[in-house]
Amino acid sequence: NAGVTQTPKFQVLKTGQSMTLQCAQDMNHEYMSWYRQDPGMGLRLIHYSVGAGITDQGEVPNGYNVSRSTTEDFPLRLLSAAPSQTSVYFCASSYSGSGETQYFGPGTRLLVL
Amino acid sequence: ILNVEQSPQSLHVQEGDSTNFTCSFPSSNFYALHWYRWETAKSPEALFVMTLNGDEKKKGRISATLNTKEGYSYLYIKGSQPEDSATYLCAFIRNTGNQFYFGTGTSLTVIP
Image (cartoon, rainbow over all chains, first blue to last red; front, side):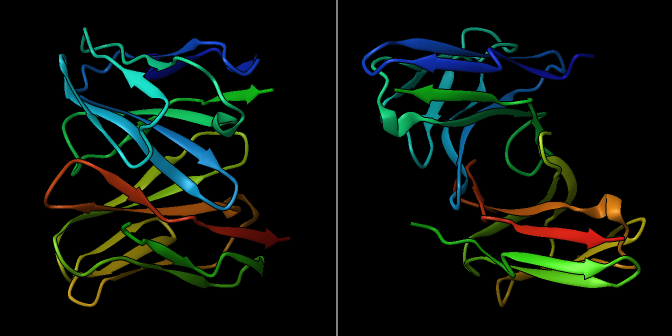
């Protein structure tokens, strides 16, 4: 198993550009989530999904969109990047819901100029 | 805003010392408390999932306790080793949803 994979590892964007951060898992996990990690702030939940076709907002959803068309994939879209979105983004998955151990991807470092 | 606090923010100990740190969370609507270990340049890895008041979990030299009534969990490391150097995160989950609320972590450095 590859576990949770994320692409790209690093990306530089200009303000206003759009991009999609990819996340995939091969463990047949129902629950997937996106976090951003900023200095002094810990991990903050952006969006999560409890299964294909179902998504919900987390703590800091503004400026981000998600969709879950398959169990395996959970892409995160930035429609118009802003410098405030400079961060490290982690995708995570678990078998089902919040009582289960989460498995994290390697992270995507995003710099918005 | 839901506050999950971890203390201390950072800790330096000598190899062989035992240490402990705290995660504080709301005492109402408790569902689960997770502990993760996060090494530099890697991803967080799960240590424990705790769900019952009075739970005690152990993995090797690392153990954790849970008090849901007063809203805290302790993580203990016995006989710290340099490879224990990492940031230790806790995450609180309410019984009203599927969201994880992470603390800001305790950064542990074990000096050989």
